[in-house]
Image (tube, rainbow, N blue to C red; front, side, top):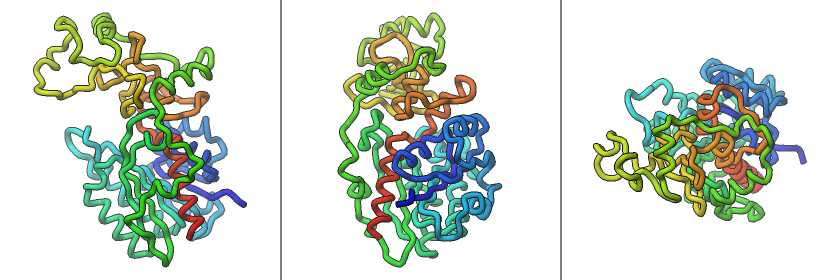
Length: 344
């Protein structure tokens, strides 16, 4: 049986592409605008035709031509537009043009007519008017949808990461919108919860000497002392007065509660953000050692293979890791789409 075909829009560092490939898809083409993420993508997926460009400047016909596909032949179009504008962590002025990238997906769907569409984003997208506009446009050309809010931990990812998932299927037969996406996940796919401790233990067994990602942010003397004062399982509220920051003392209640928190060994790690190795920005202190997470540890919580290569400086790699779709979650979603297509 030939592999199902896929095209990856907003491909980032290739986490979703890796997951889809693990699920048995042949990813034929991808689009990514960020130069450093594109370099990472090429280093790990050299056989995929990658377009390093703004997706708004890419013609669907071009993607079809390089993929050797005609309208209606593509099995899956995956799209994960930038999520920062829909995130609860977003602050400041909203970039409406960036958020409008969600609507640009319709242009590709109308031309390519893929059998299935997979959209992954933060839960905040569900409340945005653009989602309704996108669904209405695609329902008008014959697509029906299932949507769910899922946690990556439900797929065995050692990280709590809530995401909004939209799956669209082309065809005359509609799919039950009340159906649960997880019902289509093959029983052979383990859903057992994986803890941060289990993930770190596995990394220790398979880590490579001299791994360029086995590095942490170098803290100042004051930050190093603050990290050393955090008890196992604790956070900034457990710090003695001399190590507390003035800005934290001014905020009310539990604001910025995760700042300077240790990852807990017996639970999934917290959501890896674009500052996922920066202790001041979340619960990103190593569970037992007095340091922040390494880039490789953060990538492991995102379920990237231990040998996955990243390009760019420290900050660029940290951003790529935090922006990625967890590989194992993408694999599970790919298997769900494959199962839905097989039953139609």
